[in-house]
Amino acid sequence: MKKQLGIVLAAVVFTIGFSIVANAQEYRRNHNINAREARQERRIYQGIESGQLTQREALRLDRREDHIESLEARYRRTGDGISPRERARLERDLNRTSRDIYRQKHDNQRRRNW
Image (tube, rainbow, N blue to C red; front, side, top):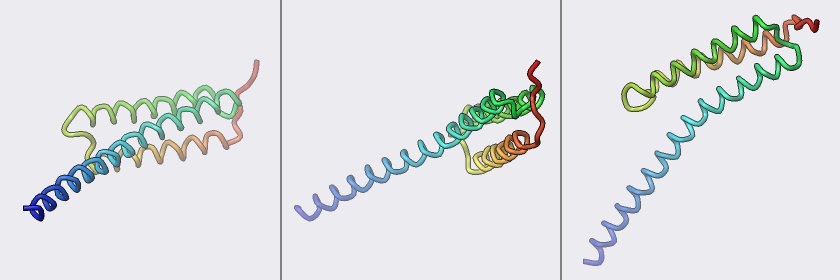
């Protein structure tokens, strides 16, 4: 009887522990996308403030960030969260936008101060 109770208790503890870890990983993944979007938006606004980005460059980059956010929201509304395929697409789009932010900030085009 004690052996069976111990096995059942161990199974319950294992199940609860596994679900906590799985939820924590899902939170980190979701938080990671949102954190990247926020960091990239800060980089765009820092480029505007420093004059490294022209108004046209900043608007174009900001529109791309908005598109990624709307795509993420659509993915979250449909189905059970973001699938691995959808996550890969979001990561790819974020990578491309990040590269473009760097390129635009370092292309020696400066905003004119009138």
